[in-house]
Image 1 (cartoon, rainbow, N blue to C red):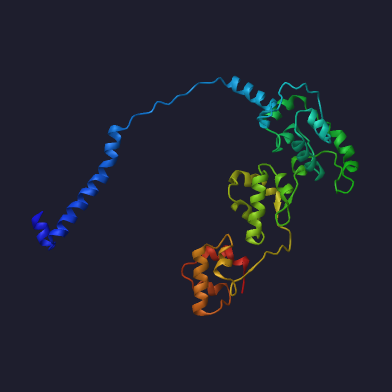
Image 2 (cartoon, rainbow, N blue to C red):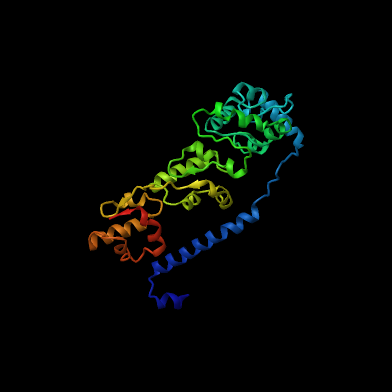
Amino acid sequence: MKKFFRYFELSLAEQRGFILLGLVILCALSIPYIYNIFRQEEEIQYELVPLTNMENNSVKEGKEGKSERHAYNHTLPIRNFDPNNLSIEEWNKLGLSSKQAQVIKNYEAKGGKFLTKEDLAKMYTISKAQYDCLEPYIRIDKSRLTEKAPSVFPDSKWVKVEKETKEDRKKLVDIMNADSADWVALRGIGPVFARRILNYRKALGGFNKVEQVAEVYGIPPETFDEIKGQLYLPPGAVVKKLEVNRCTVEELAKHPYISKKQALWIFNYRAQHGPYKDLESLTGVEMLNQDFLRKIEPYLEF
């Protein structure tokens, strides 16, 4: 140790400080080991509760008003029914809340029909437990549906067909103008995904192609593959463009395709070399690759 101090020409005060620092480091490193030695294991207390008891308790809580979510009565006497064109009061008698019934009525108001039992199961507002209880009593009269279609939807462009297929029943969705209800009508798209799609479309400035819907956060690839055939981009659709020669760093970074760093590179390069003339001018920014330029091209205006 003396040779070490002599080699670095440390004074006596510096030598003492070095030794003290070494002791502090050793103490800090030893704390986890000392803690493990003296730590006492805490015993976890638990109690096994039969699942049937939990279900009974959930129903009781719902009756007392503590848990509305579990208040659905599975023992409610149910008669056979056709889910098409039922009133809210009739849905209430079948065990659904007024809010659940209103969602179904909104679906029907947009031209929705229940052609099979499974169509009712696709409604996000109905839980699996509720559907399982209702399913044995569902009776759909398809002949009555085709006969009454013109009178139920007088303003719509429904065409009476003798035999419907699954492709006929699919409703196409205009990805540039569809509202939340239109998106929710698609299989696998609930209110949360519908809201995210609308927010993403607004942030982009509009969709440029159908595949952009798959970029929405959280949508599973299999869900997009299933609904892709029902999506279309209307002819002449125009997206909102960014004026790349006038936008600030903050305005550029608001676009989902442009990160904060990329916005800063674009802004600084413009400040040093002058306005961009076309997309080719952006290739001068070394940090921007071809994939980025291909994605952002439809949204830039020079």
